[in-house]
Image (cartoon, rainbow, N blue to C red; front, top):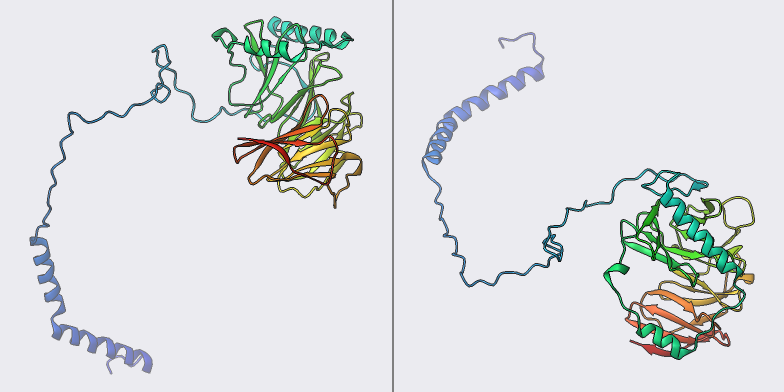
Length: 377
């Protein structure tokens, strides 16, 4: 009644607040809260300290390898390696000069390596007769092989994902690709090895051209490049937004190639056509295509290995959709890593499977379904 300017609702609200305050005061809540707080602060928490167990004197010491202790076998501590690979600028599209990562363009070491590659490629191209070794001589040469420290070389910085060996019979010339896109070249008869950076991602497949060994083709997730030593350049043959997995030459002159995609498709690339896109992309029904390999005699056939699928296809019959295999190689129960024709006749195919088995198939006459000829655990 003392606030005539208030509305009826506001006067009722004020009356309720006043009555509630009188009610709480009658209960003496504030005094009770203060008394409880005083009791709580006086009580000390009861903490039981547990004695630490004494270390047994005869406790077995866990052994750690020298690798985990970062100690070289000679006893010298190893330098700490970076947890992750170094960051490198992205490799641009298009042709790239064949310049080593750590050398200037006019380096004598670079010139010597590329000159050796060019020289042995010319010798290989001029060869008219191939040496044929009988099986006994071949076994003898294998049995005489030894691995010495002089024959071990760090060619690339990180884990090797692929390798190719030049067909020269006079010099062992090796190319290796690592997980970061580096490509290393090593003339085994010399100490030096040189690293190039033609790719951004892991180099998963490499081949020297069977028609011209002066060309080294290398494939990463997004590009297929040709290192041409005669021009000292890495040309870009194919660029794709889909991840590439492997490739193989379809013709003896190495002008065309079949490529596999990680999403299961396959494609055909023709080096003679302009542009960097594939001529054909075909869905073969695979969830994943890990390797493709062309028949050494009947070049129209290639074998593709996927998740649990291994099939032979005729490249002449490929189309964008609805492709059916010429032959299906049955019996795989787990993921298949690779499949390859025998190199001389192509009458056999060997597969590598995650069930710890090698399987050999008879492909001398391609039937629709082929069972394993033999299995090796």
